View (cartoon, rainbow over the protein chains, first blue to last red):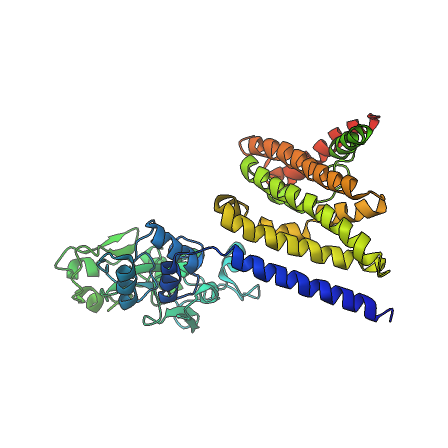
Length: 260
Length: 195
């Protein structure tokens, strides 16, 4: 009896309070704009924060309030953006598709090692300790901080360098923010040409460090008919406003640093 | 008349001499968490005051007419926590409907009132001190006001700390904790008050 009593009393209390809260939830129900829910359904739901709002629901609310544009989410497919625009009664032109690209070819075979790194398997941590085992201080550390932040499973580490699956990448920019060496950047998806190196090391030094590093030889500059590629600080740089994606620079590159 | 004087003295005693946050050290979590801006601190303290007042009344009735009757006083803590959780949930629903601006401003801190030990503290102290219904509600209300006073004073100081030239090692929480300690010491001065 003495055990039953508290169980009974507390259960009854619990049930009563449950009913009370249930009724209150009905009485004080807040009518939310149903468009918010509809838009939220069309979003990827990864809560990556690439739009600048707190998660996908926050972005959906901002769209309904008129604060954010329907195409403000970099991860949403074109057809869904059109649907969101339809819900909001506006039209949007979809901008050029972007994609994240890794500007490094410093795989374990290409780049020389300066030490054996035994520390925490995280790029940010290794960079605070003199930067991991690769001799090139501009290289991809290959410890996968970008892999762990990617909500779309688009990045994997292959032979010591991050590789991006262009089909899955939504250009949300989380990896760009995370990469301590800024090796990943967002580039237009339709331009196949890009310089896959960030090294500002002088050519002679670079030859010793990495087999696939830009040595600033300027052969690409001479090969380009459109004046779109130039070497600054021992590193080739493409001006995408001028680049026609012809691939002439990639062909001439002695180190095959330019991807085409 | 004597009752009113007694209640006023009880309130003053709670707010100044036995301040819940600065003397009895209850409700420290929201005290540190929501004191960055005076406006949000004020909203939070209003919510706490409301919950504390209602919780005092409800828990007093619960103790007298349920727990005492069935002789299960030892279930006090569990039962009180249940009541407070329900109350907070209820306040949250009402606020979302009636005052969405305040609801958004309070955000995560409103559900956190559930675990604000000052609320449970008031409810239990009411019973330990043997207060009747009116005294309990007054104690709860003035407990809320004491929380309000403490958090508003603290938030005012913290707003100024934002722009102050503080040594690197003390920036952020360390200086906030030092400030809280200094305010608490200042409140020790009220200990000499005799009503």
